[in-house]
Amino acid sequence: MSKTDWNQYSLETQAIRAGQNRTQEAEHSIPIFTTSSYVFNSAEEAALRFTGKQPGNIYSRFTNPTVSAFQERLAAMEQGQRCLAFASGMAAIMAVGMGLLKAGDHVVCSRSVFGNTVLMFQNYFGKFGVETDFVTLTDLSAWEAAIKPETRFLFLETPSNPLIEIADIEALADLAHQHDCLLIVDNVFCTPVLQKPLNLGADLVVHSATKYIDGHGRCVGGAVIGNDELIENNIYPYLRTGGATLSPFNAWTFLSGLETLAIRMKAHCDNAFELAKWLQQQPAVEKVHYPGLEEHAQHELAKRQQSHFGGVVSFELKGGKEAAWKLIDATQLLSITANLGDVKTTITHPASTTHGRLAPEVRLESGITDSLVRISVGLENINDIKADLLRGL
Ligand SMILES: *Cc1c(COP(=O)(O)O)cnc(C)c1O
Image (cartoon, rainbow, N blue to C red; front, side):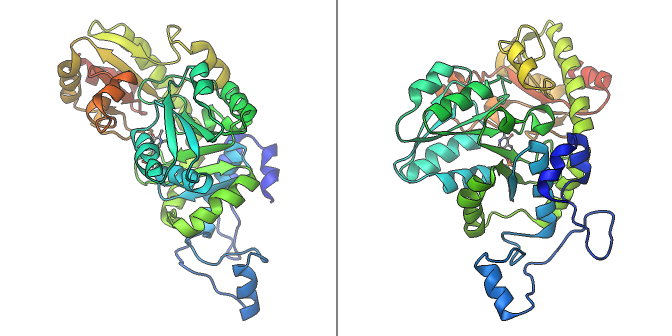
């Protein structure tokens, strides 16, 4: 079945069926192809493959059947023409920069992106003469004001981590295109189940498959999805040369993760929404950040742009860092770990962990106070999660 045929099916079906190219062994499950290279029938065939005149596998740094199956499945789910997998989410973001940027170019990036993404643009692309300006995610006029003739792309995550703010993808895509720039969206928090940025006008989507796509906290991986032309001309040549390749074993793990993604996301969202409403009623809690709550500044936008409100809740406690650490240390069930998107509920103190390497003033500008706690709500029974939090509230 060709790639485009998957558009006739809904996401739940794509997640289970897309990407499988059954071999002559007639296997039902997708196999793990542990091979570094591939054999040619003749010297001529080898030459044709290497020059790209004949399609087919050459070497697993850039194509592997198990990895290809994962790519095809995720591309179908994001409604993109093509997906390339990478060794991690950061490797995928690195590939976007390496593939699209040159010295003298400019990037406008949301201030509220993953901590390592800030460091990637500032410290590493910055070192090679690419300048990045950071703006407030939800302030459309700030994005517009930051765009220069040299701007190559706008980069954002929505919802943001850890404050769960929502950007208007459609409006930012229009803005980017008016200025001949691209819009790149990190879709880790929503996954294609809740939000499809390409359909809203984004040019590329990046993923950390480590989070909800795996869903069980086992493997690290990433992906970039977009149209054939951008992927073929800008991202694929970098993957081939840069070599931050996803292993077939990890791709196989993510393939099974995708199969249950839709039902897991629904359950994560239901648990998170209930927890957010419950946290609001706790006297020790100052403020809850969750887009499902009517008080959330982008509640209406979230309803329009996403099919549900997501699995991550953050909140501020009365009593600063001391209260935050006390709550975290009092838990017995929840995992104290910075990972998210796991079936296990995880609890973290962003200011001293995920965002601890940012300068204190940058952190505060982003609204990440010392009293903030982030919970990636898992699939345990919600009453057990609440009871565990009550120990420290
Ligand atoms: C984790 C994460 C990344 C980086 O992904 P890795 O797989 O850890 O390299 C990028 N963006 C977001 C939003 C993330 O949560």
